[in-house]
Image (cartoon, rainbow, N blue to C red):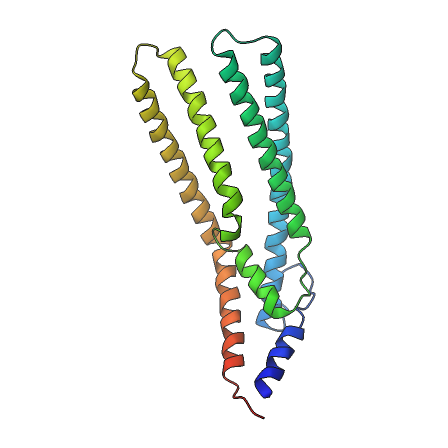
Length: 220
């Protein structure tokens, strides 16, 4: 049937390999999209490599402080301080490993895979929040939030012993909500500026491909 032949053809069509600098000479919308994807992916890979080194250095610093705190225990809450230092070291180490994995995953993108699967994978990659990564992101946020809260309350008890612990808890929650809100707004704006236009183009090309497939009647 003609529709089945068209589907097989779409699966066999490969995304063209083109040069990275711009897409002024692109011969089709797909060529231009792939040029934009390559350019943005290169920037993302560079960013994650920088973050990998940043988090690795931060993890080493916390490991060093943890070692010092183990040899020379602090005067107040030594066990809690060691626990928090260990958690923060693991958090930064995990963030560094995740950044390294993301950079490696981007470097392994196959721009010559079939158009159908290429556009589908690119759409997942350019969403504001990829549902496939929530299982890793949410526990990371929970652990970082809990550790930050414990560190805040420990410092609050030390410097403001006359105040009720509830004041410290409320102040931390307010601070943390503001930090998360500001980070979310900044991240959303950056995504809308750099990645949302690319995502719209990906979805437009996918819609055109699907409409072209569905518009062909089945013929024996």
